Every structure is written in C-alpha cells, then in structure tokens.
Length: 148
Image 1 (cartoon, rainbow, N blue to C red):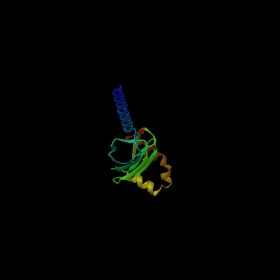
Image 2: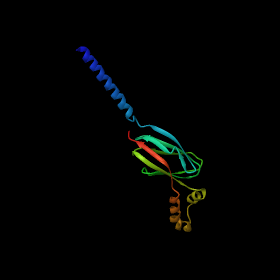
Image 3: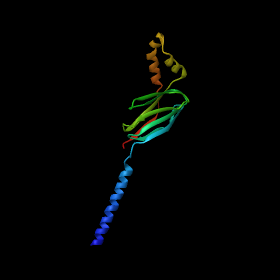
Image 4: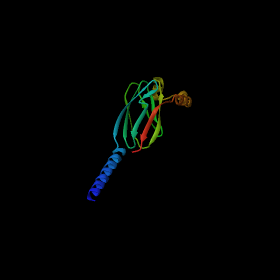
C-alpha cells in the first residue's frame, strides 16, 4: 500500500512540475526591449511582418531607399523617414492583433516645399497635394502583437 501511495505521489509531483514548466513557457515573461532592423526598398518592407508580444518596448530601425512617412495604423503613429538614413521608430506594443503598416513615399521636391513653408498659391493647392499624397500610400507590411 505504501508503494502505491509513493508512486501516486511521485506521479502527481511529476505532472505538477510539467504543468508548471509548460505554464511558464507559455506565458510571455517580462516585456522585452527589442531593436528590429527594417528596410524599405522600392515599396517593399523587409521583414514583411514584425512579430512582438504585448508590452514589448519596440524600436524599429528603419532604412528606406526613398524618403517618406512611415505609418503604424491603429497605434496611429507616423514618422518622417529620410532616404538612406537610419531612423529609430519607438513604440510600446500595447494593443494586440494584426496592424497595417503603410509608407507614403515623398520625393525631395515635396520634402523641401514642406520645410520651406508655403506661399499663398501653394496653400490654395494644399488640398490637392494632400489628396495626391494620400493616393501614394503603399501598404508595406504588418505588425503582429501577441497577447502576453
């Protein structure tokens, strides 16, 4: 009888240990600080999908072949990116799910106009410019945030 109790106790301890280890492996652990290199060449982002876990503090190190605006939808974070110059894009991955990333290419003449301000004629054409600029939005990839 003691042998059966001993075997049962050992079996329960082993099952409990396995369950504890499996539970720890499945939980995301503590949030991580992540640096992820991202390249945008000819409207194609690499990697196409960025995968993180909820709570992670993420810095995308973006290098693009042409300047423009990088936009992480749902998080509604935008940042201007200079051509051929690495830019750090920081956010905390709070919302879970799959989110679209777009890029609005901007040629140098558009960038210089924005830096130098607009005269009266340019202001009248801003709405037309904005419509053209939005039409050039390119879906370049996705951010996937898994629950912790």
